[in-house]
Length: 257
Image 1 (cartoon, rainbow, N blue to C red):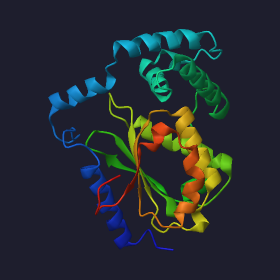
Image 2: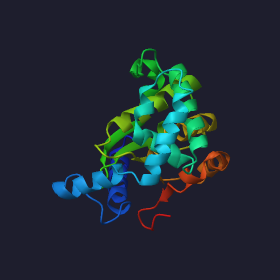
Image 3: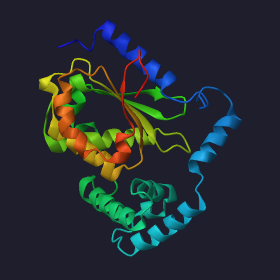
């Protein structure tokens, strides 16, 4: 297996990230380091602004959820959050409400009590693998999550789920004002059968799609070995149609598809 800590591999990964940031976004997007405050402000307004239809459906959804929200959750007052669940269900209020109530129930049962958050002590084995990094933001201002799949080893599933939630909460907390999505890079250099964890992949996918809808902007999978396709064929049918559109196999020498 390739040594992912080597200087050559670190440089290769850095070049890949740079390529994704520069080519994976439109030339008309705003760089967070451009210093053009007016353009950045305009971009934020476009991201936050709701259409009249969205406003109407958010209002209806909130009223529907209120009647079944036995936890008096503050998230019910978050218009932008409700809109994400609506968009994940193609603006169907009933389906989005059901999805949101499922999220509230999961949050109550899965997260630490009294609105707490997970810490490194909740998943020591996952932290020891040194596989997750946040190298910055892309030109649209979206935070980047970098995961080294070749460092992943199958551990206790519940611990891995806590790690996934910790990662997603960490990434979402780094989103600039007016942004809702992040970019993920899955670097599979060095990935082999020892790293294959279909059960873990499906658990992470379920958490992302069911409880963090419309948070993923794009997922770039890089340095994909042929043997990974065995696991991919098992996972792919569980990826919903909206998420599939966001997955790209990145090759710096070819266009992104």
